[in-house]
Image 1: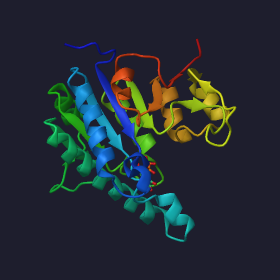
Image 2: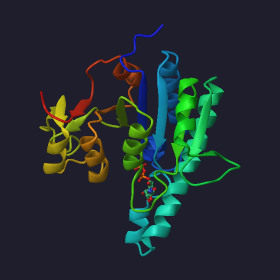
Image 3: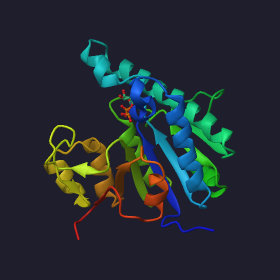
Length: 241
Ligand code: UDP
């Protein structure tokens, strides 16, 4: 039985999400909650791929600002995403969801290497594929990895789960008058310099006409609602209707 609006999706989860209140590392209750949300969507017969960030453990840019060489720092950041991927894999398997971790950086004892056709095969078999290691290249982000992998696997949409309920014209935490967009074109995100994903990730989606939905993943049941096509969060499209 499926009331899903989508057949194959890519969920982007930032490392920060996993940190929860503690602000660092992985908070077990958040991880459990996330695994439950994903399991509910898998049960709807939807193919789910996940790109996971690493910002809860290590960010290359921040370390390079403190004097570390950027490329080395970025490799550390990519390793951080592998830790998170293994944590999510463990939580999902604990809920009976079958999974595979594919890493952009070879580490055979821990994860499969990234092979596009194999990833697609796993999805067809209803395994959740967790992409670790970002793009495998320094100077990129896991948002860009999400855009790239979504296109490679033929996902219909990227769903970016965040701590806020969509895209605003200014920071809703600092500005109570901030206005939320129900829909916004990619180009406006670039021209208004809105902090949604970095410009490489946004451009990649825009150029390849891949829609993006930004929504609050902290709210229970929201992931399922988005997958069912409920208009929550903000839909980012190539052109505004
Ligand atoms: N990173 C990288 N190349 C990639 C993806 C990630 O070098 O393709 C590094 C980068 O240093 C980044 C860190 O990994 O700061 C963690 O990823 P990100 O900041 O995107 O995680 P998120 O903000 O989603 O938690």
